[in-house]
Length: 488
Image 1 (cartoon, one colour):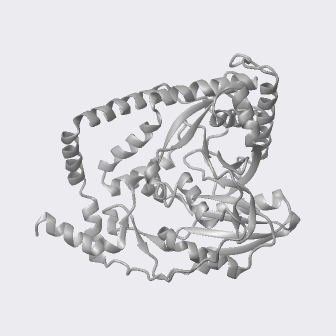
Image 2 (tube, helix red, strand yellow; image 1 turned 135 degrees about the horizontal axis):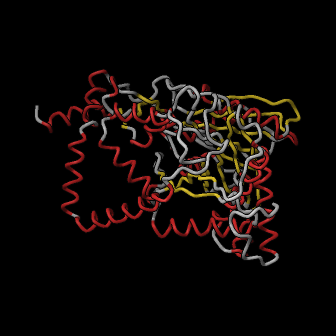
Image 3 (cartoon, rainbow, N blue to C red; image 1 turned 90 degrees about the vertical axis):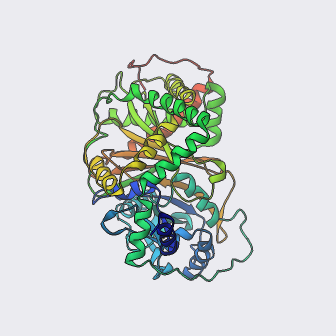
């Protein structure tokens, strides 16, 4: 059979399958017994909690807009290709909607314990990779919506788009309508093999890229220069930072806590001391890690905490595409700097340099290069990389912008929303940031056994914002030189 004929057969058998992107598949490959790779959120809403019928009706009405939530992962036989998404012919919405409660009146500690336990549990790979729990019993009659979605389904920015579908901008929206759904049949063994084999034809894709290069040599040259500059920006940070307790083996259990700040305060700092909102946020997190390390009796003089800061490379026209389009940059948090204005100035200097070098494209280019590796080798290599200790990065901090107006779910106002992000490699503590309705919410995930003190980090972040506000109010624009030991 000709190549065209084989591709036609592949299309016919694979019509019910959608191949997973390389980056999405990586988040599946790195998962193991102690590393559940799910992201999520903790939303606190006004009471009373919705009934099960209200909840189910609301989700059922929105699922037609997000088909992935009714699909499960299909792994090809012998890993001859990348995993695919197929309809779950036994999809049961009630399985994914959970209900729980904390001892009433539940405070922050009770809710955070619940979240840590939930984020320790792996999602069932035989079903669509998401769950949502209603948590009752919170003080003041409030309730929480705790969601978790596997990272292979969606990245942080796309998660924000999903939230906008579930929530309303007014308390009394029009009644929702549930659209009937009929799953497509699961592929046969022959169909799955044919579809996977067609996707594994890397020489064909490479040839297509070569043809495109011949058609647009100037664009290819520009991308090459851009990539070289971006990769060069990583070179100074190939040397591992000093070892800290933030890295090392971790167990299967998680802790979670949160902190919050006013977006108006952050903008005040930005106007008074310069930089961007993101610069101010990272400077406050730096104070939190400084406090955490000092509380552990570790030396901070002249030290930095190297941080992976994921950056969305999703173009505006890609909004609504629920796949992962993220890259990352490396930022050295100057925890050895005691003065808040000096910490912000150093963060700003690094971020300005990254923007000039377009460093965010480097990670994306490197991931795309892996597209030439057979999926079976990619899976094995990624798992191996995740299982090996690495010291090039100490932590990660993800900042995702959210809507700056009130949202409602079934008529209940959303009061707060903080993210949950997974641990990976040797990172024992990570931070997620989400802005909503004039507030910044920090979600901090830590290993249960080695990071019992993440509350110190949360308090330090809030103190970091407060001290920057004070510095901005006094007109302070310069601070103590890096590496000094002035009191915090």
